[in-house]
Amino acid sequence: MSFGQGGASWGPGGDGTPDWAALAEESAARARRKKLLMIGGGVLATVAIGAIVTTAVVTSNGGKGRADGNASRLPAPADLPEDTSAPAPSFSSVAPPPPPDPKDFISSAEKDKAPITVDGFFPGKKLTMGDRVHLKGATSSSANCATGTQGALGSILANNGCEQLIRATYRKDGVAVTVGIAVFDTEARAKKTVDESSGGLASLSGGGVNTFCRGGTVCLRTSNSYGRYAYFAVGGFLNGERVTTADKDVYAVNKDLTNFTFRQIHRRGQLQASQAVADPDS
Image 1 (cartoon, rainbow, N blue to C red):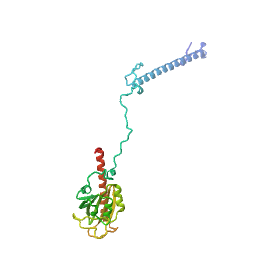
Image 2: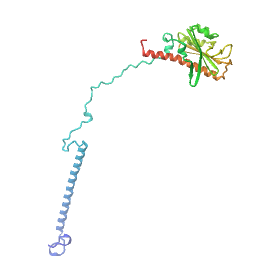
Image 3: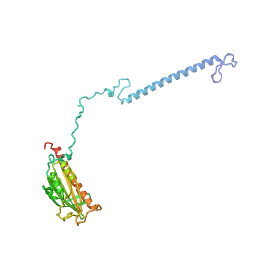
C-alpha cells in the first residue's frame, strides 16, 4: 500500500481510488479521541470548581474550619440562651400629684400665713422695669384702712372687712404714683370691694415727693384684685397739672407699678407653694 500526500490511504492496484473504509475508520477514531478529551476537561473543571467552593466555605468560617466537614458549628442567634435573671422593669400606675397652685395660698387667710410687711411687697429704694427706673418715696402701713383713702373708698374697705392697707409712692420724670394694697380675709371680699369701689386711694407724699393729686386735681385712678388682695393706684404730675388721656407718661408709670404689685402678690403665693412642697408637714 502506498500513501499519498497528507497521509491519505489509497486502495490496492495504485489506481488512485481512495480507500473510503480506511478514511471513515480514521475519522471515527479522531472523533472518539476529541470526545474523550472533552469529557476529561469537564471532569477537571468540575473538580476545580469544587475546590474553589470548598475554599470559600473554609474562608467564610474565619479560616478555623476544616474542609472535611468536621468544622465547628457557630451557634445561630436562636440558639443563644435568654437571660431571665434580670428583673423586669416596673411602672407605677399612680400619677404624681400636680404641684400646688400659688393662687390657692393667697386666696384666703387660712392658707396665707406669711408675714405681711411693706418691705415684703415693696423692697429696696427703687423699682426697675426694663430700662425704666422708678425711685421709691414714702411708705405706710395701717390697720385702719380708711385713713389712706379719699371719698367713699374708706367706708367700702371697712364694710368688706379690710384688715390692713399698705401704701408706697414712686416717682419718675415729674410723675408720681401711689400704690395701695388692701388685705382681706377671703378672695370674695377683695373682689366685692373692687366691684363697689368709689372714690380712691389717697396719695402719699414724703421721701422726696411733694403733695400731688390732692385738692380736686384730676389724676389717674385704677383698681384691681388678685387672691385676697385688692390693689389701687393714684398717679399724676408733681407740678399739679391735670391728667388727660393724652398723658402717656402717667399711664406708663401707673402700668409699671400695678404690674409690679400683681407680680409681688403672685410671688407671695409661689413662695408658700414651694415651702409646702419642701415641708408638707409645716
